Length: 303
DNA sequence: GTCTGTTTTCCTGGTT
DNA sequence: CAACCAGGAAAACAGA
Figure 1: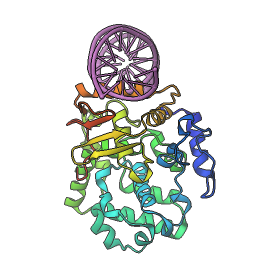
Figure 2 (figure 1 turned 120 degrees about the vertical axis):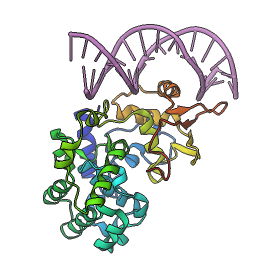
Figure 3 (figure 1 turned 90 degrees about the vertical axis):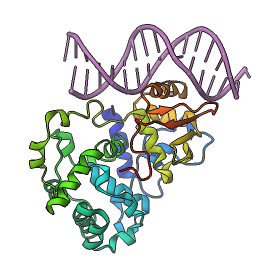
Figure 4 (figure 1 turned 135 degrees about the horizontal axis):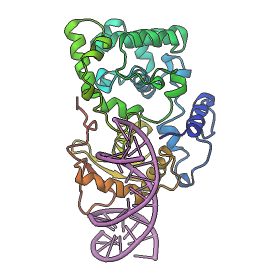
């Protein structure tokens, strides 16, 4: 997965970048970016997030989204815990929301969101105290130490942030059901005992990383940060097309720390998905693929 | 160390 | 001709 070296580069970039900086947080100029708009896709899509450096009031919609994602990641909640569609708002609006608003918008997760935003509003950052509070309320079923490390060491790596959100949807749906049924915060100490080992082991491979198809999906799901790499051809049918095939391959290679990745090789991996019905063939259309029945998390109103 | 699932690499041949 | 597609074979890789 992500090497420490790569991790450090990204982390450093995200920490030192400021709005006027033109430096590439990944530390080099990608050859494939030549000829593209002056936008490093690896930066704009994955790294160099600055929501944590700005007062929430000044967040863009996307930064609001990143904050939500951060909460999910940090607390090992999954995507269905927070209805992102309810937070298609900028920071100013977010800051004006009351606890009631949050609860209305996000149900049992509302309290967490409210606490977090209050802390950010008054302290300017998501401090450890905050995380402890959050962790006390929604704990992970995972116990690996890395998950409990400070978010600023881990959370801005482009590894795993979006996939986890989708991979554990089912799990969180249960959490939400439990929490709303009991009107109590989610107690995962109890829940942990209820989970069977098999269930916890259901995330067999790739617990933190991402599969190629998830990587592709996540690019598609972030239109604001997807500088023309891949686009939906038919959103409801899950049909999409590569616009910059080699750029996507390079980005994938960057994620896997493999500088020799090409679209040729990426597409071979994509073709393996046909058999597993993660993708369906789209005949006669170059660079066009379609999500299959075993691909999850791409539908607009999938829950 | 083995097993297994996934991805990478290389390849041949075909299509747009 | 370049770029892409299809899929076999085998190696590499990572997690269990």
